[in-house]
Length: 141
Image (cartoon, rainbow, N blue to C red; front, side, top):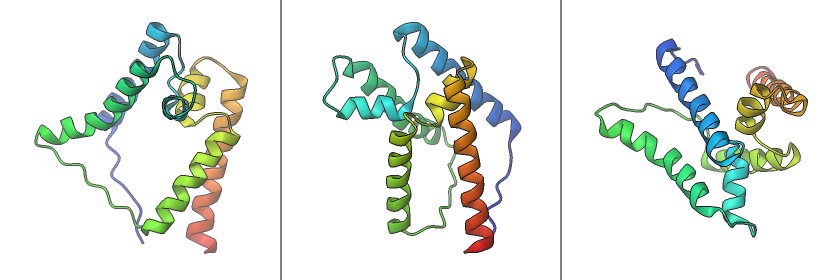
C-alpha cells in the first residue's frame, strides 16, 4: 500500500496561516483556546452558556470544505480503512483527548504558541504515539 501524498507547500502555508489566525482571533475575541475537542465537548456537554460561538466555530469547520468544493475544486481523499476501523479509531481519539485534557489543536497549535510546558509535552506524546502507530501498522502488522 502506498500512503504517500503530494506535499503542496503553498496550500500548506496558507492553511497553517489560517489556522493560526483563527486561533489568535478566538483568543482575542473570546479569551478561549481553539481546541476542537474542548469546543465540541462543551457544545454537547452539560456546561454551556456560550454555545453560540461554539456552534459557529464547528459550523465553520463543516462549511469551509463545502465552500472550497463549490468553487469548482475537488478534495481527493482515500481512506484505506474499513468503517469498523474508523469507528474504533475515532473512539480512541476521543479517549485520548480526555486522557490528555485536550487535542492537537489545543495543545499543539495553541499550547506551543503560548510556550505552555503542558502543551509541549502533550504534543510530543501525540507525535511519538502517532509515529509508533504508523511504524507498528506498516512494519509489525
